[in-house]
Image (cartoon, rainbow, N blue to C red):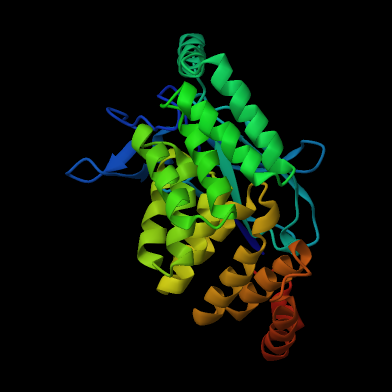
Length: 334
């Protein structure tokens, strides 16, 4: 069977202001004539993707295509180790890759290798951003976070307001205030708090995600999709943004995007977002990819067996297995 490896970059906060991506004058990027970035050209990066046994012995070694894809021939019953290395990236290793359990598409997130000077500059930039927040404001934020975890919403709101009063440019406090206000049922005030956080810092992904969630709840799926994608430009691996993007894409009928965002989400810790696999499965069904849909339904049931959609997912797995046969389901693409 064949396993596809997809390489992607997490450039958030690397050598740039927190939450931003710097691609100006970067020869590794491909762009159109107006300067819009489409992605990386992996051909010239000298990256090697190695397929190894669990102890590190190498079976295959390939260089990625320009879009970052590598296709490897694997045995369904084997367990593998993936190692990705190159002169411009931090070495990445994925253990316990099992094609027979659905790992026929594996996303590997890469990080640029920074020089000592770049690391120092990045640390100094983050420190400078952090030092601007007065200690008194931080303490109020911490008290608010503690109160919110205990469900004491009115108390949390009071502390967040104090933090903002001390430091009006505190986008994190404004975002947290918005969360409390939404939980208190004060939707308009909560939305205003999120918008205030984004106005202070256009790259602040948590507030962008919260705005996207509000748009989704209002069934403004186009707006939710746009806002989630904005958040992903600043934090490409923000689990909340990936989930909202997958949800909104599904209800827009952009089924391929739902599957793509779900697969990226699955490559990172994504706790409460197992429902994305249910949406991906429905999307794959809509694209007449029954075997892949079964794998997504099964993943959904493994991750969130008590979800209200779980009963329907089990029924659909049974129906799809009857239509495609067990031989095709094994090793279905992910």
